[in-house]
Image 1 (cartoon, rainbow, N blue to C red):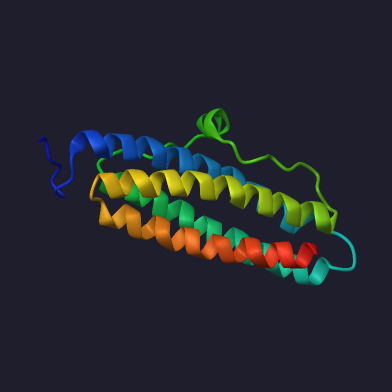
Image 2 (cartoon, one colour; image 1 turned 90 degrees about the vertical axis):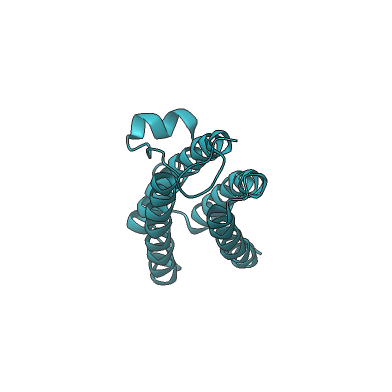
Length: 156
């Protein structure tokens, strides 16, 4: 078996890098969506949602960095152009959303897409005995499931 310097199977690591780059692309689209929601939200829920969306995009920005650094740790290269991101992203793009309900629905739908990818990566990282990626995905999933629950409660 061909192992990397950190002791992981190189073939499995290459597959993980590809999946992590897909996650990175989706996070970048999600991040930009939430920035747009933060800037454009209107209505009686403005103050609460403006602050909440700032929390969301700050968290997303940190996760983008964590994903890119994990790709580098695994010996890959993080994608870094919006052209690349748009080609592989499945997160819905939100444009000119100022309505509170539509904004929160966009976040819930986006997180649902991110969770699908993270669960795929969780399986791949488990198969590759990659505890670092596995741990990161577990943390992301736990946080996002709670966020989805809270956002769905807000929508009810």
